[in-house]
Length: 456
Image 1 (tube, rainbow, N blue to C red):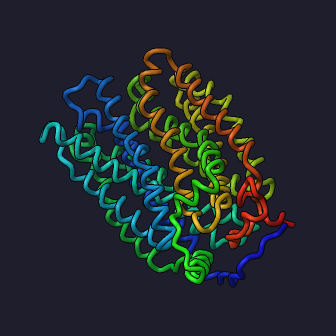
Image 2 (image 1 turned 60 degrees about the vertical axis):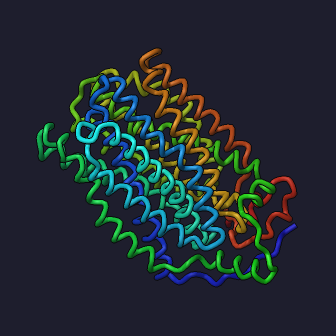
Image 3 (image 1 turned 45 degrees about the horizontal axis):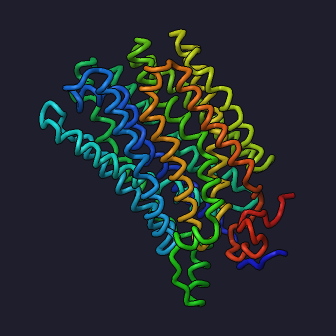
C-alpha cells in the first residue's frame, strides 16, 4: 500500500544552485585535502617521516598511515550521522570541513622525522585519523544534503555535485603536485615543496565555509524535525537503524566494495608502484593520473545520467561487474612501463569507478528512512570504505612482493564480485520521494527501499 507523505514546497532555482554549489565545492575541498595526503604518502612521506626505515618498509609504513583514515571513517560516519539526524545536515557539512581543513594545515607544518624523531609519525597518524573522521561525515552528508533538495526524478543528475566534487578534489590535488613538481628540483620538493598543497587548504576551506554557511538545512529534514517534536519522539538514530534496517546497511556497505578498493589502488598505490618499481618519473605518473581523473569525471557524469534513465541497480551492476574482470588487466598493462598503457589501465578503472560513485550518491540516501537517513548513509558508506580502503592500503604491497600483480588483482576482483552481489540483493529506488518517513509501512521486510513511484 502507498504511504502518506508530508508536502514539502518545491525549492526555488536560486536555492537549488546554491545547494549544488555547496555540495560540489565543499566536497572538492574536503577531498582535495584527503587526496593530497594519498599523493604525498606515495611520493614523499616514506622519506620525510620514515627516514630510518628501508625503502620497502618505509613505503609500507606510509601506506599504513594512509589506511588509518579508513579505520576512522566508520566512527566519523556514526558521529556526524548522529549530528545530522539530530541537529541538522548543514551542521555536519560545516563541522567536517573545519576538521578536515585544520588537520590538513597542521600536516603541512609538521616537522619531519629527521627533526623530531618518532614524534613526527605519531602526530601524522593522529592528524590522519582526524581527516578520516571528517571525510567519514562529509560524503554521506553532502550526498544526503543534495539528495533531499533534489527533485526525485532528477536525483541522479543532482548527485553529480558531491560525486564530481570527489573527482575534483583529486584533480586539484594532482595538478597542485604537478605544478610544484615541474617548478622545483626533487631535493627542494622533498625539503619543503610538498608542504605547499597542504598549506593552500586554508584558502580553500575559507571559500567552502562561505558557501556552506549560506544554505539553509533541507526542507525534508526540517519537516521531519517538526513531526518528531509533535510526537514527542527522541529516538537514538543508530539504534533505530540497527533495529529496522541492518540488512540494508550491510548491503549498501557491500555495494561500494568495487569503488573504494579500485580507487585506492589505482589513484594511490599504482603511483608509488610506477615511480619506484617501474622507475617512471614522478611527473609522468602524475600526468597519467591526471588523464585518468578526466576519465573518472566522464564516468561520473555518465553514471548520473544512467542512474535516472536505467535505474540505480542496473547501472551499478554494469560498472561493478566490469571491475571483476578488469582487475586482472591492471598490472600486466602497468608492467609494460609504457605510460600510454599504464594510463589505459588506470583510466578505464576510474571511468567505471566514476559511474558507480555517482550512482551510489543518488542511491544510498534513498535506501534509508528520514528519521535516521544521515546515520544510515554515513554508517553504510564508511563501513564499506573502511573495509574496501584499508585492506588494499595495508596488504597491496605485501601481496605484490609475495605473488606479483596477480595477488592484488585477485583481491580487487573479489571485492568487485562482493559489490556486484550486494547490489543485486538491493531493490531499485529510482523515482522514490525522500519526503516519506512512513515508507516502512509499504515493505515489512525491506523498509524504505521500494520505490514510491516509477518516473514517467
